[in-house]
Each structure stands twice: as C-alpha cells, then as structure tokens.
Length: 337
Image 1 (spheres, rainbow, N blue to C red):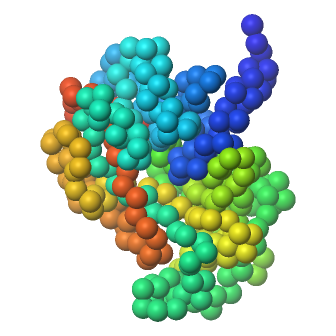
Image 2 (image 1 turned 90 degrees about the horizontal axis):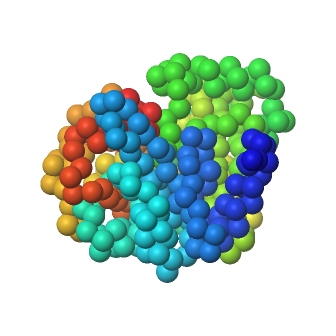
Image 3 (image 1 turned 120 degrees about the horizontal axis):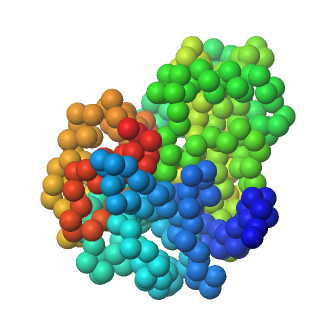
C-alpha cells in the first residue's frame, strides 16, 4: 500500500501529462485543488469532482464535477462513459463549455445555462485603456496610481510570511471565514507549480495579492486565469484592477495569448439552447437577482464586463430528477452554505 507522499507523487505523475496537453480551459488548473477527487482513465484523461455527502442535501451522496474533462475533445464522450460505468453516484456537471454540454445533452442530461466566462485576447488589448469602453478601468487604475499603489511580481516564498498570513486572515474574516471551493480554487499558502503571484504595496505596506493559474496547451503555457485575490479593507479603490492590468502587461510582453477572468455565475445572457430544467432556470434567475448574500453575482459580472473581453457561455448539467435539495448540495460543495 502506498504511503501518503508516494500516493500523491503517483497521482501527480498521472494527472500532469494530461493537464499540460489539454489544460486550456478556465477550470483546468482547479482540477488539482484541495478537496477534489480525480477519475483517471490512463489513455483518455481525467475529470475532477467534489464528493458531497450530507443528511439533507445529499443523503445518498453526490459528485459535483468541476469544469470540462482534462482530455482531447474527441475523448470527452468515451471518458464520460468510463466515469459513468465506474460510479453509481448522482453526478452534476458544473461550469462546463459547449463541447462537453453537447455530449451530456446527447446522453439525455438536461443542460442549463450557468453563466459566462470572460476571456481577453492579450494581443488585441489596449493597455493604455483608450476609448470610452475602458472609462471605468481608467478611473480605477488612475485612482490607484494617484494613491501611490505599486505592483510587483514575486513568489509567495519571497514575501513576509506574517504579512501574508495577516492579509489572508483579514480578507477571509470579511468573506465568511473561509474560501469558496470548486468554481474558485482555494488559495494555497505555498508556491505552486506554474502559478504566478502579483502584489500591491503602498510605501512598503502590503495591500493586496492576485493569483494567476496557468492555462496549458500542447505542453506550453498559453495564458492565465485570474483565480484569487486578497486585499485589505482600506486598500485604495482600484488596487485589484491595478494588479490585473500590470499582470496583463507582463503576460502580453511574454507573448501569452489570453487572460481569463473566470466565471460570472448566473449571468445568463444567451438564453437556454439545450433541453433543460425550467425550475433550475427560474432558481438561477432568482438567485442572481435576489441572493447577493450567497454570492454577489451581479457585481461580479458588472466588474468583469469592464475589461471588454469575449463572453463564453458556461453550462450545468444534471439528471432529469434534479431537485431543490440537490441544488443546495451543490452550494454545500462550493462552500457557499
């Protein structure tokens, strides 16, 4: 039997070849997050899920698959079939793209729109922020500059541990005491392979941190996901945007293709395009409009829109008998409850 360290190395050796070849989707690196389990097919690839068991929300257990399979698109269907043959647990597929949604819909799964992912073509992005479409970004960036905010890149291990711990504690205290999971990869307080970290300071004082996860295609990094941010309560307005814009300039200079700002949950702009659950569509619309205490969906979407990126539809697929308590189980898996 493998000990913990050996098992982790073995798992790493199985996952990374697929991630390096096929990890270009926004959720790809999140497939490695703490708390996730991976179903691995040694020839096809893998998919990641968060197992949930709760006496009310998931009394028989439920797997919440996060993102697309880490595999070639041509292998989505056989990988799904292999997973379904290996488990009898009810499964919901969350934040998936249209290619995987096509496969699931063809298998009879209701597929609902779940939001949009915002992607920015770095080569075409105007870092000078000229034009009225960038008016909000200009104002936020200029505010941070006028307040003396300075941005630099550096590994976690290069920063003061006490400073980082205090930043993390203060931020989490204002966000319910813990990170979300699943759709947002929890912050790991140690250097991670391929992940980049940008910091904002004012007169040497740490104000904020932004974490960027790599996107891979055919063994090379093609861009990054802005995965996580931390900022102190009294950081000047525009600090987080100053970090993102600085990082975009760095990535663009390196010839990277894109930056994705990730999912705007429940920002439903394209309309339902698959056979779907009508009550789930109603519930998503209600949560988006009325439940900012669960997650500030409208504010999240408003802010990401100001970067003028392209919006790629995201979907959720579940069994036809999906019920309200299953939806609550999903929220439990994401640590929103």
